[in-house]
Image (cartoon, rainbow, N blue to C red; front, side, top):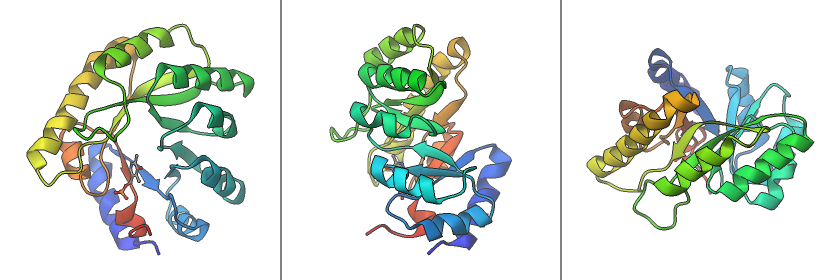
Length: 215
Ligand SMILES: *Cc1c(COP(=O)(O)O)cnc(C)c1O
């Protein structure tokens, strides 16, 4: 079930601030995606390659599919022909694989590099040295375009901690923004998007607020 009221409220918050919305539809049926599509939403985010593959085939061709999950190199080929933006590029190896598959698909695939900003070890992402190396190596690649950074804050009750993690990602983003023409900073989910916007996010990835809790 889609919460249309929450969707409209969210757009009222995001639009004046120039923040883009990716509606995270993982584990939700195509009917829910269509319900938001009919309200005008075109950007949707998925976490699992097989699920995205199935949904993409059944849904309108003008949907912009964002891959926001942890992507394994051997699965890039399944999404390379149509994916709009890959958010979670967390290694140089993955970046190079995306470049190779972009070449095969005769396109330049837009991506974001994922930075590890949370305290939890379980979350994915590069450290600052790995980020610097990936950005440097990217210059040699012609079928992948790094558009910016993505990060996930700690799952914490402490807003100061979450705010500090977002602020750190924003400052890294600012370092690269001018020299590398970055334009996308993907941070913020249902529970922390307001804080993320306050700290400079221009793209939020929101699921449960729109589609309800996942089982
Ligand atoms: C699931 C997921 C989201 C959306 O989370 P909600 O809390 O449901 O808004 C955002 N980003 C990533 C990377 C996710 O895996």
